[in-house]
Amino acid sequence: MRVTRLAEEYAQALFSLAHEQGIDEQVYKDLSSTADVLGDNRQFLYFVQSPAIPYEQKAELVAHVFHCEKLTKYFYELLLRRKVFHLLPGIKIQYKKLYDDARGIAAVNVVSASPLDKEKQETVKKTLHSLLKRTIAPEYSVDPDLIAGLVVRYGDKILDGSLKTQFSLIKEELVKERK
Image (tube, rainbow, N blue to C red; front, side, top):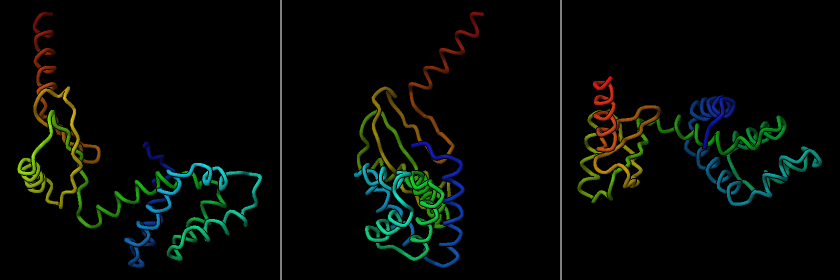
C-alpha cells in the first residue's frame, strides 16, 4: 500500500503525542485493530465516509466499536471531522515505521530464490544486525526469478545480491562494449 504524504503527517503528529505520553505501544495496538476491521469490513469504512451520515453518529459508532486510548479516540474524531478516516491504514503503516525506529527495530524484507532454512535465516539476521546496528525484524519471501542470491529491502534502500541482477549488469556491460 502506498502511504500518502497526508497520512505520513497525521502519523507523525499522533506518534509525537503518543510517545510524549508514553502510550505509543497502546496507540499502535489501537491503530492495528482498527485497520484490521477496516480491511475486513469495507462497509464500515463506507459508513464513516458517507456524507449522508452526521458526524455525531459516526463518532458514536467508532467510540462504541473501538475501545481505545483517549488520545486514539480523539485522533479518530479528528479524522472523522476532517473526512479523512479512509487514510487510517496508511497512517498505521507510517506509525509502525516511526514506532519501530524509536525502538531501534529495522523491519526488513528478504527475498530469496528458494526458501531459506532457519540457519540461513539466522545468518542473514545476524549479518543485517551488524550492518544496520539495529534489532532486525525480517519478513522472508521467495521469488524463483532471482535464480540465486538475495534481495534485501530496508526502508528506501535495496541490497541486491541476486544472480538475476548480476546477469543484467553483465548484459549491460556487453551491450556497451558492442557500441
